[in-house]
Length: 245
Length: 219
Image (cartoon, rainbow over all chains, first blue to last red; front, side, top):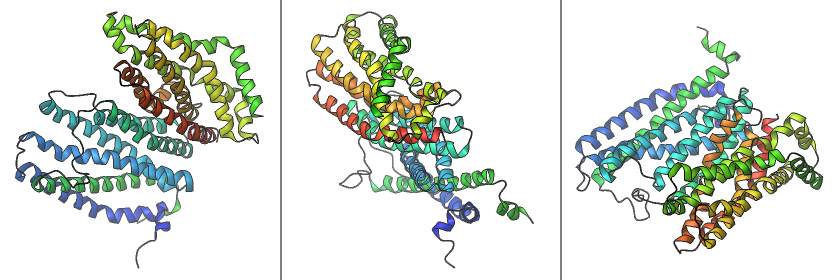
């Protein structure tokens, strides 16, 4: 009555149709949030007194940066669950996260450099946040490459899971090392103790975009996982029965 | 058992001096490429010196990593280690220690000589040496995890570089940062303490992660 419980959901057999039912809702929600946020941010929000209109790239840049890190944490969570409880679905989650995370990271770097050119006068600076984001991209690429290099799915999953967890330890160290090393990027303005340092007229569309990106991520992740299930469970009986008319 | 593994590693390194000296030679060659590449301007050389020595050290360490487990895997000795009653993490730690003694330590000791060529003064040489003494075991410990993960994979060498170099970023930054801070008169204490803290962390976790990676690779 209340839908499948969590442990049953962990079985691909139940997850597949469940994700299928959830997907359209998430998809439409993401589309709505993104359209509303983008329309508001690009059209309605006032121009910045310092940066003019070029600050508007923030509405892409900040959500992408947020998701580049959120994806890593989701992936590492999946990796941990898979290493400890050998849950197949957690490995699929981790596998599907890696290319998404790499894409969000690349988007962050590209939009950041487009923003940096008019603001800082340079496409690229060896600044703390830029450099740690670049290293994050390398970590994602390493994870994808490692999985690609191992043929057996079980072994590939465990090896990448271990590497992802090593990366979790390393990410704060990289972050602080480059932060103390050299800094040009503006400090955080959303996650401050004293509350956000952005005017509400710009903050609302930004939050809408962040929510939109996050829901989009969830939707794409579910779709990818459904594909992954189809690929891995080709021989499974429930799948052939599902296919039958 | 632990002592025997340690003695065996040192003996193997002693019997194959070519393998052991290769990273050291590579280190010196890479280090001497920098003045050829960027020009022999003394001011420029002094400013890039610490970074250049550290990059050469990172690359030389990378060069030695695939050999850490590959030969043992081919001869079957690695499976014996896995089956032995001694904890695998401890055995791994001993292997990494032996590798550091035979390749990392000579590299750190040769570094001041190389740095003299970059025109660093004696105070900075001491800081560089201290940083490398803390940093090279860290490079070996972190590298062992990736070496174990890529064990026996096709194209393992190139993949190893991709996996391990991002992990080396903090070591490189704090290591060369120590020399730069000392040269600017800030003192190298903070950077060296951070390197030491990371080394302590890696000493606890890296052998354990490497052991887990070996179990995955030989599954």
